[in-house]
Length: 323
Image (tube, rainbow, N blue to C red):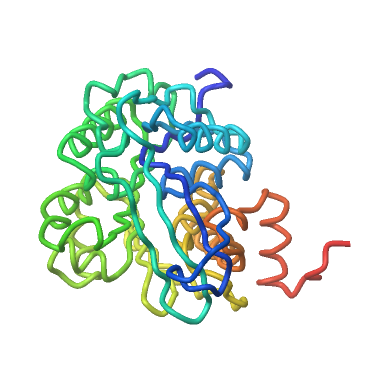
């Protein structure tokens, strides 16, 4: 494999994010900050900041929002050379507010977006060449039937290339009802080598308890299931019977959005570096803790050095001030 080949490929919808000033309800907000949002693009940016070679594949519109999305991903060092620009459909957008102690209002404007028009003919084997990990979320296949077919093709190519498939269901109930999520995304759980899922997501998608679903999946293709629980702890279970639990790190919350993508970023980075399961969980929890102290999905994503300093402070009582 060439040195320049990406270690990780992510595929999904990257959208323009318009974030209301912190604390202001969306309906009353006047000032907004522009950023980029999207589960797979968040993970791509996070892994790139941690020093990994990452490719993001997706579709944006031939519009200023699409230009902004690609420019931000390039600025984070993400390879967007395979990104597709649709001349006839817009880039998706989301509006949301930000508050640490009340429900956050998220409004999606993605119907008919360029990303929802993703189809199998947009996927070529060259996209996965040399990739060690394909990371996907359930958001991509739920966008449209053609996007679901494209997701299945990507998974098939990754399996054929010997790449590990990492999957986060990332259930968003505004996109579809529970039955549709279970129908479209549920079968993808068994295609994952690594599954990162909330306990409620596993229950919704399988009709089983999270632990029962994990045990069943681990008897199939899946090697590792990480269950993210409602109390913010995480449990990693493996096919060989290993179990590791991870508590959350105690930090002051600014905004919870992006925590799951940040956890996936930290966990995947550790596994790519060959670190043991307990360290991978710790790094996942660390990156998530850094992200929820900031208001966008990506502001808190650290460099490797910043992650290591933070983890030392969290776990060994290291100096929290970098002097």
